[in-house]
Image (tube, rainbow over all chains, first blue to last red; front, top):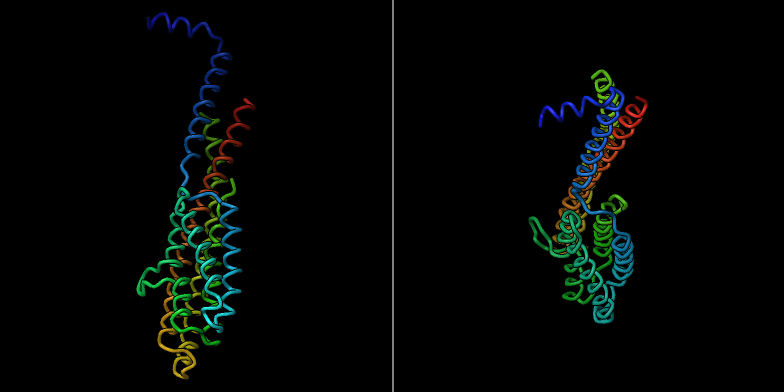
Length: 162
Length: 110
């Protein structure tokens, strides 16, 4: 059998043999390239998440400007903001390879680290407890909350477009 | 074998140049951002302490602001880890294109 194969292969001219060898090499090479590219480590960019997060940021910052007024007057609007925030948070958890963005949302919505206090719900809870907030605090808190949203948006914007 | 060695040398040179450009830009940006964050934190803490001393904000509000600044620092670290991963993926894709283009150009000439 081995003898026959050797005999068969020796029927090719050096040019034909070289042609088959190069093509074999190319097929192997392209196959390895495709298998390597399939190893992704982070989620792709999601336009829906980016736009909705930017919308949530804008609505939240506008609402914060009113936190020197009575909480009761804005309860429905705060509820709407929190529903949008919880929806987006759930959406992020459902995306594959999205754990870094989810961790950012954890900090915003649940809190981690030393204080273990959230950023967004805690602000609204404080507003609820105090009835209304003072202007010095509002100015500082608004900057902090805006910056937290900016980090989420920055990471999303950097992700690779599909 | 001579052809393979030539291709390999060409690819190696291009990949090294690509890596130098990509990694250096990212490392510089991340270092600058960390320095800015620490400087901003220092200034904010000073400002919030003065507001607390002047009774313009209370202890609970002060705690919220400090906690949010710590959270912001963690979020920045996560952003930088993410950008590093994204850069690594973009670099990997660039290397793949570079290798494919180089090999196909050289082999198809044979």
